[in-house]
Image (cartoon, rainbow, N blue to C red):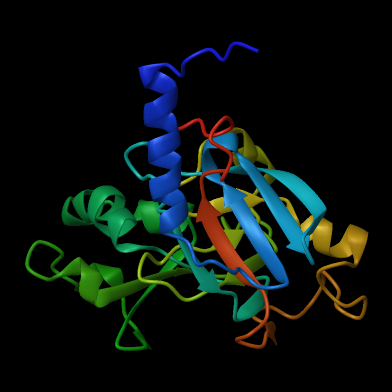
Length: 228
């Protein structure tokens, strides 16, 4: 049997995937959630067997989803959305400096400072640090996080969440957007059947630190990695 020598491209792909694999822990635990960013897929694995798969949206090249793993500590139903610093600086600062406060009304954002509500019209946005303020979108049918947020503390401030139906055709930011909320109710394999999607806003399920691991990374199979 004659073996065809691997091309330089194949060798490079294998080396890249070996390096990416090295970034991850040897054991992700008995239950883990795998976000394969280049494949735009999410997998839930239990005892080595895939029990659920779903399509996802991930970050664009400008806001690329980072490669990391972390312990999933809580699931938050009907979550509030706190605008990240990139949104404050790139989307809100200039309109507020120009006195365009309607942008807050359009996106249903309230403003607070050190936990206390403030009137955005009373702030000179050209003189203050906008990052010192908190812009919050309350839970509801128009909330960009949808019905649920899966939280796993990490230095990237990245998490998995549901989203609005019309946003599912667009690329996301750094976070992974998924229909996992539907998975939770349909399969009953991730969440106990006692929890309802009509749960009170902000209700949390706390998970043991030794429980589910969330990982956002390329596939371990060199042939399936589609990073460019």
